Image (tube, rainbow, N blue to C red; front, top):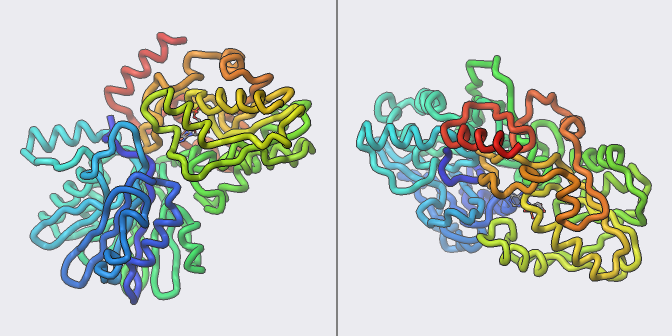
Length: 470
Ligand code: AMP
């Protein structure tokens, strides 16, 4: 199984001026991809230096750090919080020193043969590891190859042939900057031109703040090198394999103003709402989003159905992420702290709420009760993706099968459990249509249980249990 790695955000920048402040700004633009910790590494002309720490970007990297991080090329990382692993030592970028210099890595994704490779290098070659992060493993394998050939492109390629799973990487090797995307393109990574240089980022919204030009997405399997002269592409040698872009990036994870693999997140969510209105119509007075990710889905539903759109929940932005809290009581209490209904919108109305997904059902159970307490006459629910039934091994924090309400219950049973008057999920075909890419180019493993890559032991055990449950 993968190491404790989750959907994070990465940045890389090469300019004629110092890049640390630019990387800092770009990281703040993708802060939603990770709030547990953040860090920046730059090459200062002599060596790679790093500032990193726990918290949001501005907590982790202070103004004094930015002054000290003087250099024209660098990388940055924001790390996603997870209940299981909060160790500071896993904070990125992760550095590995070899005789020719330092490699620093920022990684978004999850390596599916992490345990096998770690065992191979621990037991077979006596390597030691300071973290339980797959990013350290990747950097050490690159380092191993670099020691042998001192050729970063070859070393990254060799590493790509060893590691499996999801990885979008920004890599700094002394004064050389690289962007890498795994051959399936699970997680996003894009390239942009900014005033005095080039940048890489998980999401195109990070390029926008520099009034930069979005050049393109890094293609699956491609390595990009950025130098003073511009960028150079080293495309994947094998073009036969299909892609597997994570559908959850569009549905939940990415910013609505980002464009991922040619499809704007906002537009995809609007399309989902549109399709939901066709697939699951309702006789209600108004459509309300569960903020924030349900907004564009709800708007799409409202426009297609002609039913009025209203904001019926006030969101407290300063409450911790409910999803990752370790126990159910805390998660439920936190939902109440996070969202509060606006009574005048809700009272006496037949309401339809739209959320992006149901995992455990915690959020909706609480929200529906709140709406009824606030005087709602009926509460109907529509969901922007199909029932989630299988764990993600490619970087989204949905790992344990016990989490998924839809694994053990039918839609009707879920409706009863959350206390809704009706419940409708987007179909798999509807989701694919909304994204607008061929089904074969998407990773839908969490909703159809078909993994695009080989999954090792743990997953086979999971599959066996899955069969027992049906
Ligand atoms: P639950 O309350 O367990 O059913 O989780 C569903 C809610 O959590 C939805 O409102 C989603 O927006 C959000 N959500 C879904 N997946 C994730 C994730 N991997 N990390 C954080 N939040 C999530």
